[in-house]
Length: 336
Figure 1: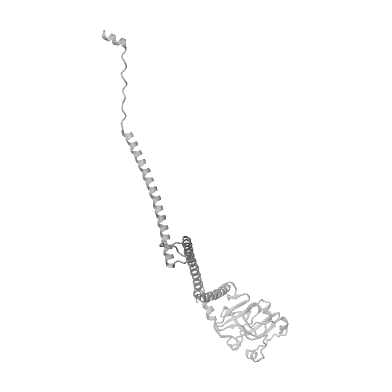
Figure 2 (figure 1 turned 180 degrees about the vertical axis):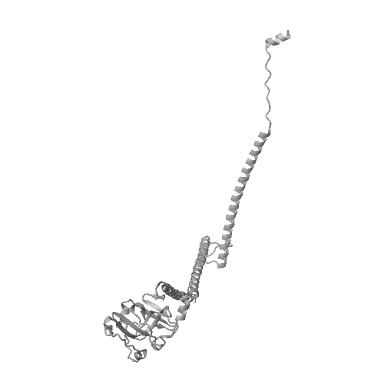
């Protein structure tokens, strides 16, 4: 059961890490490209915030659509029916708009696209050129040869209703890749609060869980080592008792008779305590010898210091010269 629970937790952690890494890459890439949209390779993720493309072949508010980013040359070969994301101006603000191409025509050497939302009554007021296109939603392969017929200066505009009535070509679908309702989630994850709650906190919990597993492993290894040490002592004791062939009462014991487990444990504990006591007594004995030696040295130093002080305090004795012997002639003269 515990192993199954650990496996489930590990799988969930891997899923969270993959999700966190994907969101992190998308958020970071959105800060580095000009359009400020999350991208992975040539794929970009857009969150739909209006209902202008709502319909059987479009998408709704809060949906997420995946577009293929286009080079300038690839943007020159788009056709009616494809849905493109492009730069445009609305009330003097630069925005990204995702609408369907309903007309294509050339004016001189410049190719223009006429766009309209599937849920809007009129086409967009501004024509779109290749330099303004970011990507295409329902991508299909086109070539310059496919577009040679578009030479009219007055474009023929096709409505979505007319496109829908036509027989659908699987190679040129009117729809693309859409994830329903994910836009709100991505928008929340792109915010500071969402990134903290859904990315930073799970990663922190993952890190704490890994630390817990590490400490548990260390504790288990310590317990295992302790048990192995006890088993080794137990085996050693059994060998000693078998070799002695004696029971606790002094009689002969069967050489292969196993000892009672509790008695073995008690014996191991007693031997351990006796060993500890002997080591403590030996240490105390050594310490006593050291203390006695230090005390004798201190006493010698004290005696020496006292002798030195006494010798310094004793006054010096004056010595008198012995009387000189009188001259014999002088003595005789004195008698006369």
